[in-house]
Structures are given as structure tokens and as C-alpha cells.
Image 1 (cartoon, rainbow, N blue to C red):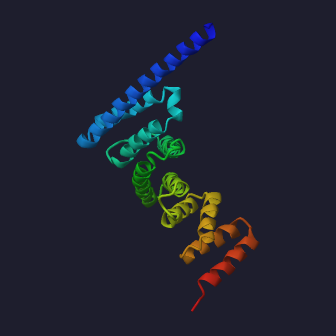
Image 2: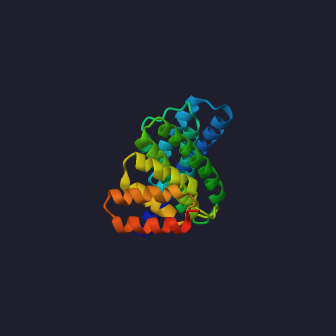
Amino acid sequence: MKEIFTFIILLLIGYQAFGQSKTLMDKTQKALNVYRIENDLDKLAELNDLIVEVFKDENASENAEAHYLKAQILTEQLLNDEYEIEDYRYFLEDIRIAYDKALLKDVRRSNRYFVLEKLYSAKAKLGEKGAKFYEAADYNTALGFYDSATYLNQLEIDYPRMIRPDTSTIYSNAVVAHLAKNSDRAIELFQKLVDMEYDRADAYDYLIRLYEAESYDVKAKKIRILKNMRFPEE
């Protein structure tokens, strides 16, 4: 009897904790809706504090709605050019995890369409910001943004609403990886494009040079043969 009583008490505590967490999520969602109307930077900063509070509850890490809410807030921060992101590395990791978990934990696919809709906006903005750092010759920072855009594109493929990879994003990611002197990442991405029979001959040229620089002569030769087959000289 004592064990049953203890179980009921623990169950009631769990329900109470869930109720508090749900209330806080509802409060955060309402604040997000207000921000979207008013576009107030102060409210965007407040949203950051609110989502931190949401994830102080250990149950939030298993809640698809909580991750989707966090993904929305991070996307709004990304889309607002006046919002200052203090640490790009942390932010980019955070937004990748938020979208990843929002899709992974949504086992009933209740929000998949809406998550992917927001994800597309985030992916496009990541590419745009990556291009700005690329133009400023800050290749390492640009690489972080392009890597994140490619990561989100992979989520689109893994949780289908899109039927093919975004090759233009992958190509940009590969070029920036090369400029940032991250040869391993550049080789990985250019090889991926070659495997997909990407329709730009210079992707093959990049990969050939990268393989040669790493003394992978046999691989370089294979890519050169593939290039000649796919892009024969007239």
C-alpha cells in the first residue's frame, strides 16, 4: 500500500512539473507571436531568456514542441540583421541541434511541415550570411555558416519534403572549405558532388587538385577520367 501511495505522489509531482513546463512554453510562444508583430529587439532578447528557462526542465530535451520552439526563436535571431549574435560557433551548433531534435522527436510528424518551412528560411539565411563572410575573406566563419546550411539541407533530405540535395549550397560549402584550408571537409563535399554527377566541371577540377595536394594520385586520376567522360572537350 505504501508503494502505491509513493507511486501516486511521484505521478502527481510529474504532472505538476509537466504543467509548469507547458505553461512556460505557452508563455514563450505568446512572446514569440508578439515579437513577430512588433519586431522589437528587446523582445527578441527576452525570448532568449525564456527558452533557456524552458530547457532547465530536463523533460524539455525529449519534447519535440520545445525543440521546435527553440528552433523558431533561433531562426528569428538569425533573420534579424540588427540582432547581435555573440558567439557564432555556439549559435550555429544550437540551431542545428534544435532543428535536428525538433524533427527527430516528432515521431507522429505533427509539426514536420511547419518545422521544414522554418528550416528552409534558416538554411537560406545561413547561406546568405556565409556569402557575406566569404566576400570579406573570413573563410573560417563563412565555412561555419555553409556547413550549417548543408546540415539543415541534409535534414530536409532525411525528413522528406524535398526530393533532392541542394547542390548549390553544397558547392558553395565546398569552395569555402577549400578557401578556409580545410582540405578534409572540401574533399568530402566535392566528392559528394561528383558522386551526384554535379553539372559543374570546376567541381571536378577542385577535387583533382585537392587529391593531388594530398598525394592521392590514383584518386585524382579517377576523377580526371570521370571529368573527361562527363565533360568531353569539343
